[in-house]
Image (cartoon, rainbow, N blue to C red; front, side, top):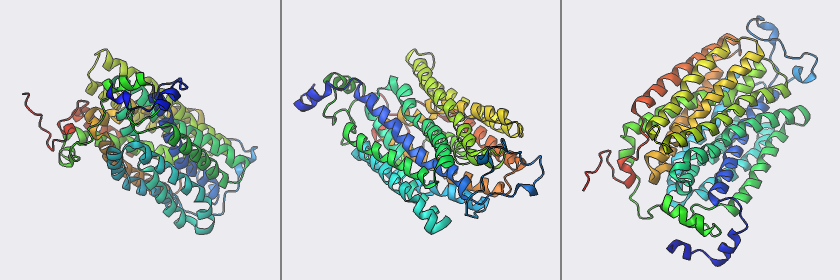
Length: 481
């Protein structure tokens, strides 16, 4: 109750105007943080299809490239843009974001652990929005090279997003609500992908392409203002949280120790469960970044969907992924709460489903050829099954170390993000002609990466609090007194 007495009187009065608990408000705003991060990240994947010079399809065999989906629709036969960028150059452009994204993960996690997640998260999104606003200027006056530099800067801004949110969740969310609220927050990635594809398709078919970047940047700036006004790093610094919720969270989520030891990097980096977690992150990110970066291009270059259809059908897989992430989060919470299964085994099952299923259906999509309905259905199943990952390994850093969740998330996400540099660029190298056969090889490589990394996680991962959570720079458990 000592903490409740420190709450200002005006804050207690103001708290009566809030219907939802503050941890739910934080989760909703966290959802929109990731939502904005993804819309700004992926809108270029749609825009690049109208920026580059239209490909000459007559040099390919009909079995390698599909016929346009609607030749009577002018948008299906658009003339393309003025930028003669090779597939390899386009791959480098799409990969460049992740170069910066990797760099700020660990600093972002450490800053969020030390000072709280509020400003670490909000300022990262703010600067990403500013760079998104500048994207059309860079493309027009600087071309591909300037765009690559700007995308690196955008990555620097977004690199703090997941580490900061991990710290905020660890500070606000009780253990038995992590699956549900964690899935809600992390589901912003799918909804951002959905909105990014659909809105981009609409804007590109009805307005000049720079508006794609302006629209999403403005939405993110509005979020920044609202978030800084209503959200705080912890319940104990929130001025207008209801006293009842504050007392509840004081019991369920004790405040972090301000005098906790320095981050035990040696124990973290020599922990077998930690490397199992990193393995699963690499596998997921390999498959996910290929889909995020290249699904619109696959549907444009190979399946030859119109611009509007591309935006719609590119978004469908993320709708399913979002629904599955929420459902699996609720199921995981119930499995743990009712002692049906340990936290470790629950995370392993969810992670296994999120890897083995997508690996199979991704390859199957490449064998569906030009059967557009079948391809869209298989990609939708692929991304739907991938949604269980959010109730699996994505919550493992919170399970392993609530005190250093931001740092663990930073390390795993940062190393995983290396695949965001490698996989899009590699796809560009492997698909110089963007044919079905070239893409089939891409999906077989993704199959291998997903399966191998998931097996490592399922054998060695852990959902238990690790010895280094108390700052001990060792992986050995202390003997009971």
